[in-house]
Image (cartoon, rainbow over all chains, first blue to last red; front, top):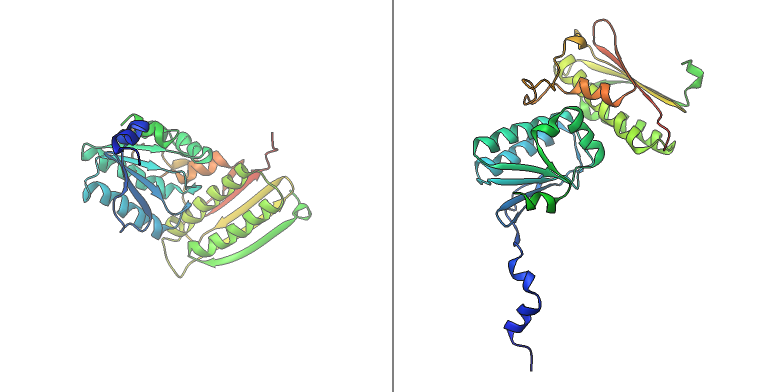
Length: 141
Length: 142
């Protein structure tokens, strides 16, 4: 005879309270978008964010998250990104303005040291709320 | 530095297209990797050349497909030098406003020249401002 379902849940109570991670939309070409609780977690598909056409598309997709999908809590996880140009920084700044205009919150995480250096030199680390990793960021939304 | 100290070099005149420039940049970076330059140096060269290339194509040549960009790369055991020349009228790099000024911090552009200076050992422009010479001295692994 198997264990009652209730007993199984008692063994792993943490599972019940963990926020669900679910794929939000499949139509994004440059981004992987997931919901963790009420936070929209965004990862980048291109390890190098350089080419103008890609940056324009990236911008459109990030702006769509705010303006069309109405994501109010947005976390950009840069773990897959190993290079970005200053043109990409421009898109992040515009995204930040759009999030603020919609009374939302934007955080960045998992930025590798060389890229963080770019944020620090340009003082954009003062504009953006940057956390070491995704768990740190999710904990303070 | 005298010419004979260079261990690798290339000279190209490319269309006003970033893709063509990036293929040369990738070739240069492969050379630095093969010579075991540290990753931070390689990142610095990629960043500075990328920014200079985009400046030449967009701001210098004004996206004019009839114009060309000249790229010269030189590698020595302890130094890499990249010279990028466009066919535009040039600009005064000293007149570029400080992008970290609080009043300008939220502007989407204007950080390229600052990043080049921060990541390279030396950045020099010619008098018209249509040619930039980027130099990176090799950092020794700590």
